[in-house]
Length: 209
Image 1 (cartoon, rainbow, N blue to C red):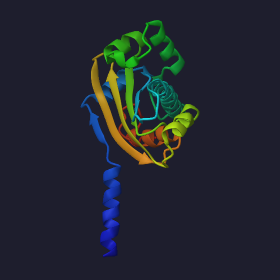
Image 2: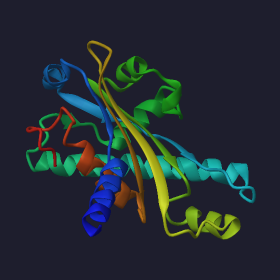
Image 3: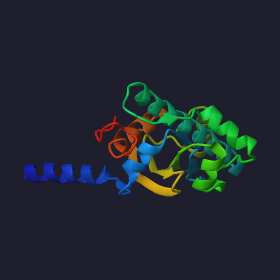
Image 4: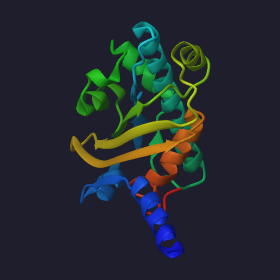
């Protein structure tokens, strides 16, 4: 009986940690032809609450987007410095400045091909974060007070995609659902990227981080 319960728990944990991965047959080849990539600001959505002002929620989503972008860049840059990633990564200040100079405050309004031309890079890493509640501090705390967002757990559904600029192809996609006391953008990104990197074509080995 005890053994069956243990097996059921293990199976449940496995299902919770399963991710959907798309890896194009030529993903590794195309990734090896790239010299520099850009991490564009993620599209972030936060579940609406009745007591939260719509404008405040939009501002919080913008805050989360920049925080996630910076954390993803920092995470990948660290691995680049360790020799685990072979492609260069455009710094987020340059990426965001180029988008602003081109008149685009929302990267989600551009196609991957458009982003490649505006940013002048060989590859684009885009992402979508769907959160059950805010995760960054500051404005998040204010929203939590208003809406009662004090539950200890947060649920995040995340999708990462890599497009090759030359071929204008989607070469990799990673969809994952995380549910835990995520705590901060840094913690969520670390948990996400440690798992996603095992399949990401930019790493020097398929073992990822």
